[in-house]
Image (cartoon, rainbow, N blue to C red; front, side, top):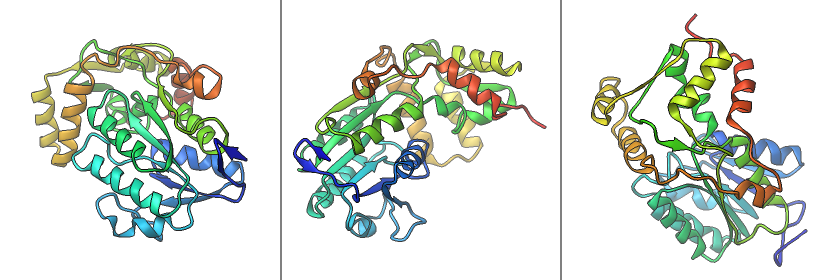
Length: 284
């Protein structure tokens, strides 16, 4: 098929960076279901891919036509912008035709990474996403919910949480269908929700007493340090909760509809389906 002048043949090889992550895993599953030649790259694959060591990047990109790029742990961390620039230039040298970048909505560093991508000479699609629904079911918020109390340094700020499945659908469309090259899709869910409201929804659907408690960022950092959480992860949490969650993202966008021609999934629908799996059951 032709994508804005670039020939993307059915036998193309699509590289997934972050293939075990919340979105990368879903992108890979969808592409493989379509019969695409998918190459997963991580520190445990051969060739290996490690964002902190560029020595293996060239081998990972050999023979690749397109790639889904999800930077770990977040584009906000120091060195991420430079890494994306290096990867993009290397991809151009290797003849990669299309890069789909998962970016962070409202993050200054993520926007700098987007600009680095645009300048490298490879066709691109950018997916700038709000916080994922799955942060409550597959990531660092899960433990607190299972324990019956989620403690976070955030108050009444609202976030248009989005389903990682919607992000994956946008990425797969960009990688397999015409019309997405050169586009930036700012994707959010269909409504604004506070973290407290999200927890209350989970409590209703699970019929459990799950509390949400707001704490000062300093007290929260102290809790993380007491739990011996790595310093770089604490830095990222502090950044996200003091900068990105300052109200700058309290608005919805129509990026999902632009890319897919349908509305994004609602948080309550996600909660109902996730609750049915038992993921939020309390301590045994």
